[in-house]
Image (cartoon, rainbow, N blue to C red):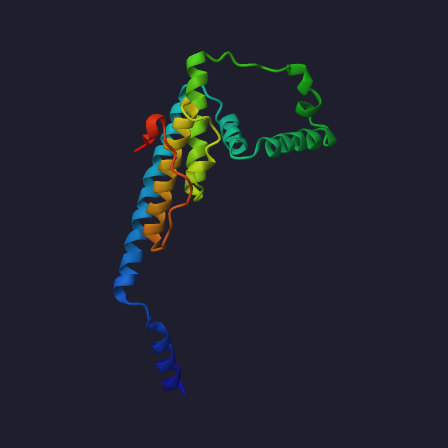
Length: 188
């Protein structure tokens, strides 16, 4: 009886997966874990640098979380926090109007840089999620259109790299080819 049990366990311990498949997945996962460790270190350094420059880190973290949300979803969350704060009698919630709106004085150059970044990040998210280039919401020929496409390309490439690392087959999204003046492609 014990011998039979040992044989059953030994049989279950053997894998039907070929060794080269195991090795390939191990290498891919190991590389991604190493990359993640490096990126985590870089992220910590970026937060430390921001803090040393006087940036309020907790507010920055909250802003990052809100940035990932749809604007109505973010507004709803902030309204809920304020409501709960009022229900609990927290001073910040009952005195919010006292502080007024602090409108930052942003230079035109900084506003343009932020708009470019926003367009690129939006495009990156669409590309990463497998969306088509034709989803670009900006008018062709504008800076935002070009930055959105750059972001889309980066997101699409990241999606393919991740799929390749995991051994998944990914197809290119279908859609019309976007061109600029005289039919030239906008991005190579």
